[in-house]
Length: 363
Ligand SMILES: Cc1cc2nc3c(=O)[nH]c(=O)nc-3n(C[C@H](O)[C@H](O)[C@H](O)COP(=O)(O)OP(=O)(O)OC[C@H]3O[C@@H](n4cnc5c(N)ncnc54)[C@H](O)[C@@H]3O)c2cc1C
Image (cartoon, rainbow, N blue to C red; front, top):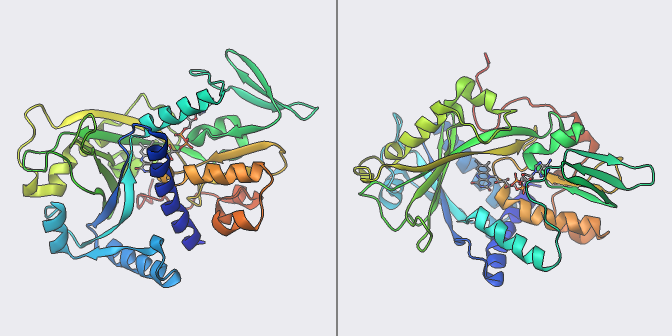
């Protein structure tokens, strides 16, 4: 199953960039490598073990191509400084990519509009009910729609409409900043995206590629553990017009720590250009829910993508359409992970730990 998920992830990355290219969507599409920089001894051991297990399970597979870097190479090749008390233990690079998700989505919506999509913006669905004759009634503040089939692609907000997801897709507020690079850093942008992994969690970083509006800027998000009780109260937060000040403050300070002397002095216009929050959807097993709701015919879901959904939601949508069109056979089972499907048993799972922080046992 892990091998299938790894293949799906790589196929998803490639498919999104290929679609953007083929359809001429202007979205800063940048297929590139990513590097995990690891600042914790335990995590470094675990990361190497995980990659080797993957490579043993799928030798020669494109989705198992990973390159290890020792601490010196991480510093010399990726501009990383010493970074914290323990310093860098190592790094791992593999195929990834970055994209301006907003511009990509607008591009996809424009294509859909040309095909006849009826798009109603600023129109939240407030209720979904099944009518006795089998249709669904979908209420909004601007009217009601009746539909034979409904697809819920509402991610972190799904449980608001489908109560069965309470406790199974839990909203989690994430924090992001866009920062101008320090004056010693490459002003045209770093080549790779990065993840910085440390004992209490991780931060993820995307440089804005050449030709983008803020070329060279570094987008960095994460620091969940900086909020009270290591981010516990970010779970259940659905309001992305608000932020946790401690988290934002930490994120704003983090790049000079990661890059050390390679950062240099801050840009004269200031380090942080923009900051924002967004809502993700987390579940107990860390996997999305894709398929028809058990016992609720014609009610379909593709949601719960955690903080890693851009690499899953495209292919999950493809898988969902295959299921909806009745092509749910060998071919689909060959590439779409069973673990992503909506099985009744997954509604019995509860959160036992937190995925991206150690979690404070006293909290
Ligand atoms: C801060 C942050 C950082 C992230 N970083 C990464 C990353 O680096 N890599 C990665 O792979 N993924 C990342 N993700 C995750 C990724 O953005 C999501 O997994 C992905 O967007 C999921 O796509 P989606 O369309 O399923 O859900 P969303 O993009 O969440 O879209 C859900 C949509 O449903 C709409 N909606 C919800 N309820 C209703 C309703 N009642 N009526 C009408 N509309 C409704 C919402 O308005 C929203 O437009 C990040 C997410 C966040 C928030």
